[in-house]
Image (cartoon, rainbow over all chains, first blue to last red):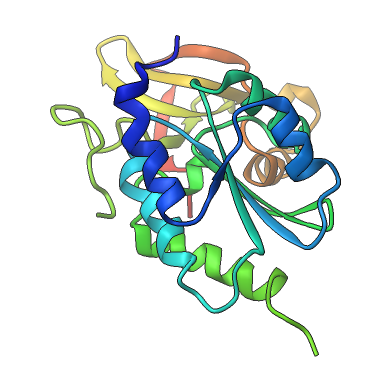
Amino acid sequence: MPYPPALVAPMRAEMTRMGARELITSAEVDAAIGDQKGTTLVFINSVCGCAAANARPGLAMALQHAARPQEVVTVFAGQDVEATARARQYFSEYQPSSPSMALFRDGEVVHFVHRHQIEGRSPQAVAAELTAAFDRYCAATV
Amino acid sequence: MTGHVFHPGHEELHGVTVVVHGASGRTYVGRYHERGARGVVLHDVGVHDTASGVPRDEWMARLRKFGIKVDHRTLVVPEDEAGEIERLAR
């Protein structure tokens, strides 16, 4: 059962403040990932403590890095159920967990961060993993 | 914040995904809840059994890459079965 909107509003705001675009419906998910070009990070948001303490702060730090995805989008597990289920269909080979992150490049998942790689790790450690992936997959090439 | 306890009053591993090495040779991977008289309580648990024919290392490598295929929403690994416990994340 979804939490009251007022309770999760700050968790949503934390994402949009760092530049992520919220996807609330399946149609919005399809528009963002369905014919994806370039690089897009999909963040599966969550009410759990490791999202608050580790994942969201870690992503915010990573997005300060020079190389970063062209777009960051987010769905909220347990809140925007339809959108989350639809997003997961685009990386169905990966078992669902939240929070988690999928980095797409030209429609293909090139890097995935599971919940077990987030919990108990510092935001700096999460950011370091993400920036390494951004350097590998999002940096401009000449 | 590494090692930080998610929920005050619980053990350090509470809420963390762990690997429990079973005395039987089975391997259990799931989110640690607590260790009590009954054994180790895990949530969202994948279980590897050597009888499956899939080598344990191969199963673990796939799990690390693609996540935990949940066999049990909650599982108690009996105390006499539960051996070493380690974090899944390296």
